[in-house]
Length: 388
Ligand code: HMG
Image 1: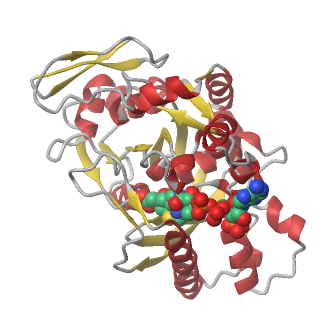
Image 2 (image 1 turned 180 degrees about the vertical axis):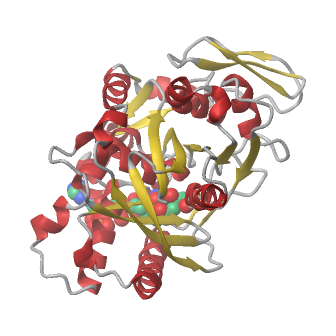
């Protein structure tokens, strides 16, 4: 029996800031962002949007297709949680009308935890093949203003249905994991913005790639040549290009530079328009590959490198299933991205500083999102979510 991704759908906010605008305000050359880090736009969450509403929006098209009672478990991966105790997925469970017999839990390990959720989901399905596990990864990436990280903010959510005999990607059981206690990026409980040692984080990312790849090769007996495409964790698209060149060099790959670039180029489009979406980013990269690659991906093997600062990383693999095109939400993704609204710098600052009441006072939020769910109010420390 094969296990893997049966459906995949993503969501991002209807607002974005063009990085040319940020560069102009910072008196920086926009090419630093467009070419140097390979990013064009960054998504900014609407005031009435958070990880819960983004997650419900990402998962809705899947639940509408399979019906709410089909989902046996919901695993919610995030590193920008809204509560220290209650899992964000419990709100999503209600918004999507999932059955009361569906279990829900939240997972955290920086950007890696969506991959932990996918692996756990595969194990649950292997144990009970009629299970259908909804994995949702949802995050809002925030750094302090006027720091090098500012241009790498973004937000987004991705939902995947993990099942037996999947119709999109079969996931192989072999993995190469790597864990090391490092302080490259972290966010203490009392902060809403991440702290990061930027240059160090890029070095640790590459080290973790090498270690995870070596372990994966021992486990799977695969080599670089066995893969057609690679999906990397995408803090910014240039990171994936550097990582892929690094891996190709480690593997003494004889492909020319253009062929190496082609193995990842289509995974980058959505990230360049959204920015970092932490846990969701590698899987939004997979959506980008599936939606945008002109040639048929049927039977093609994909290598995945998932990285979460702190750090835990994992290399694993999957193969695209015949007929996968019929399961995609390509048109919905394209119309969502094309309908987004650009914000100017003052509007960006307003969104960035939107009040987040911490003393129990009431805040009614204006209707700004174009999504199907919104955060209507926060009152007495309780968040009130409603369908639109
Ligand atoms: P910086 O230090 O301001 O940028 O921020 P820089 O000076 O290194 O420039 C970046 C690149 O632009 C360089 O290219 C420059 O040469 C180039 P490189 O040398 O690296 O190839 N450049 C130009 N190119 C063309 N025209 C120009 C120009 N000017 C400069 N005019 C940094 C970069 C990544 C440090 C910053 O954005 C940052 O701190 N980001 C946040 C941390 C991050 O994303 N780290 C990635 C690895 S860790 C990770 O992926 C995990 C994470 O997602 C969190 C999690 O796991 O939860 C972050």
